[in-house]
Image (spheres, rainbow, N blue to C red):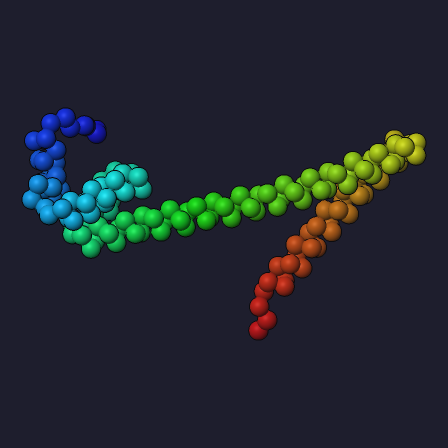
Length: 144
């Protein structure tokens, strides 16, 4: 259960129980501790999972917080980019299929034949895409 503190005495007791007392620290140490405190709130789920006990550890942990946020953001961007490519490929396939259907209907092709042609083209496009992906993967594999 998380609680909030309203008076200075309880805040000081909390800080002392964590190994710090802001009142006893020089100005630089107070800034580092405060900076660490704010970053711990932003980048972790509470206190205790990452604990810095001196300035060097607190600054190092803060650096790791920002580094992990950068890595996480990069991973999210890569996933979004991959999903965007999949969606674009799907849209391209849908556009090609709709153009084929329009052409077949403009030429008054019987429905059964239209359906067979659409299924064949769908299969052909899927196979072409699978082959392109396979070739891309094989090119990415280094030679012995």
